[in-house]
Image (cartoon, rainbow, N blue to C red; front, side, top):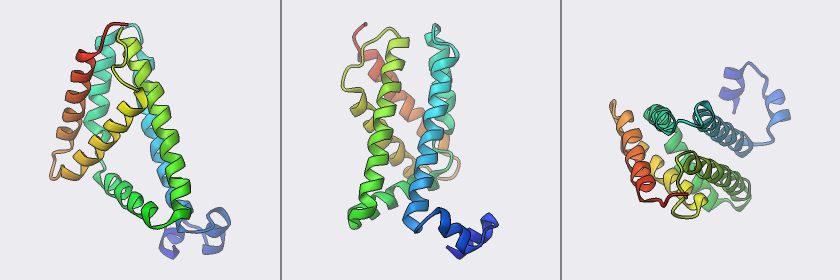
Amino acid sequence: MRDIADAAGFSQGAFYSNFPDKEAILLELVQQHQSEERAKIESVLGQTPGEPAKVMAGLEKWAATANSDPGFAVLAIELQLQALRSPTFAQGYNELNRKHRRALGVLVTRLFEVLGKQAPADPVEIATGFIALGRGMALLSRGGEVSRSGRIVVTFLKALIDSAPAA
């Protein structure tokens, strides 16, 4: 904690006045990362809502960089393991993830609507599947293969869209 406080330019006392413990800062990092990822997707969906091809191109561009920091995927898995070990951490961590999956489910619904399709399953379940796929691919990607992870996520998304009934 001392190293983090020093790097941020705060005393440890100032640090602990904002974060009561290490788990609180980890939860804040997760929340910030999740919010940033949703904002990027929302931006893509909002740029050209009447132009499905441009929306898909925007999603492909986003996906190419979505796992550019595989360290976050590793951190997310470490935090999931911590949640299994610590009931108090699990409470906050699991709630953040529930909110994130629900918010992504809303974005999945919007995406299918923009494409004139109906989501072929519960949008929250679809979002959950893509989170798991993205994390798994981030762990597999090494040495410049980050874009491969995004391409695979997009491949699955396109297959899901192709299988979806018209709205």
